[in-house]
Length: 508
Image 1: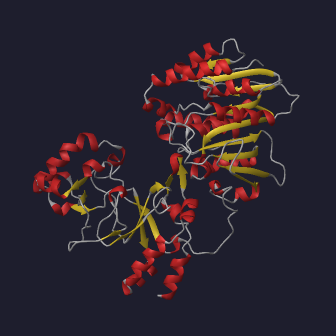
Image 2: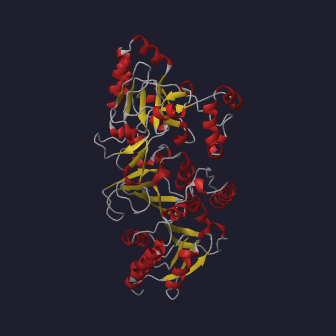
Image 3: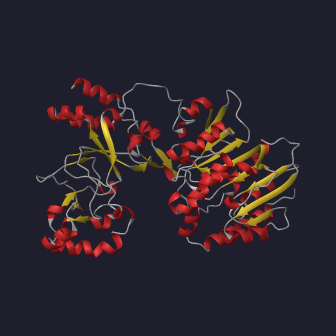
């Protein structure tokens, strides 16, 4: 095939021009992030190596954009025969210029939603795709139900309502592939750890032969304008053989990873978090104590509008609001420099700025009669705030979740390049402040709470034990996004090893 260097230079110029005509918000909502040229060529070179040399290549890209993968195919095809090349693009903004660019180059581009097209009778043996990274909250209820039905029909995959559009693309494409066809997907790596990814992983282990997964270092974001930790997933449309193993690689490049390891399908079936591979060994069955043995872990409260419900002491005084309806609350972790929060005589945290959460349980008519300043403040935000999802789902739109304060608080997210080497911080909270959902709250279980009441000195020892937890132990249970951003949900923190705390409590 003719060298496509000239076409690629022109394609990149067109891509830049088209991107500039859209706002980052518009592109983010549609999940439009173009694949870099070098990466596209690495992917196509590898994909072609998986197809027998004497087979004609039947290529499809269900989300072709301006054609980065087709350009890479032309560059890497060599003497191979290209039987057919097909692409779908839902957005004419990219699809029309791409169709013009490749009009005389053997690529048929259709401007249409791939997920709504009936699959052909003769499938494709090389499916390569960087599907739109559209998160579930950008899909309305009707569209979610349609996509769920199509995913189930095509691949028998029952996807959760929390699954992003890329999961549906992967499932729906099943019927487009020929027997023994090869698929390469450049997708967010989060499916490897989150609950909605379970069905995707089941499909990869049971319905096709999962060949390899390369995960990029999250500090090396593949897309300049998307905070996404990416992976390339390869599989063959055939049932996996007995004793099958999958190659997991990490870091470096797709063609030259920093580390790789083969993991058996059985071991993958029993592991909830695939991102531990290949950097970590297969998790051994262990009776080592974990944090949930000692704590009930909850997210901090989601107010519905921090700007409206969280006020400074000065603002409360300025508005003449009754202090009895406010509770102290810690500011965002980035404003809390010390890991130990001291308290004043009233139990308020001693910090540069005192913040308080509005949390009133009285009905509006009683507030209007007894506390007119508070009623006026609520009225000022009612039209905008009360209609928001969280607020309108409450019996009283301004009533907050029930949370008591706790001495042990953990930050919900952070980056691994912090001074401590850990993206998470454990705070010792001496105050009566609660926290918002940028924190996790660790409530001692009854047996532990009883010991702490009898031995208050143990509180500090437990805090130090929490701080001693190795960063690797925390990060292996959490999840990671592009740019090295780590997050930790309550059920993930609950699984972190707590052997030091167990030993401490057994001695006290």
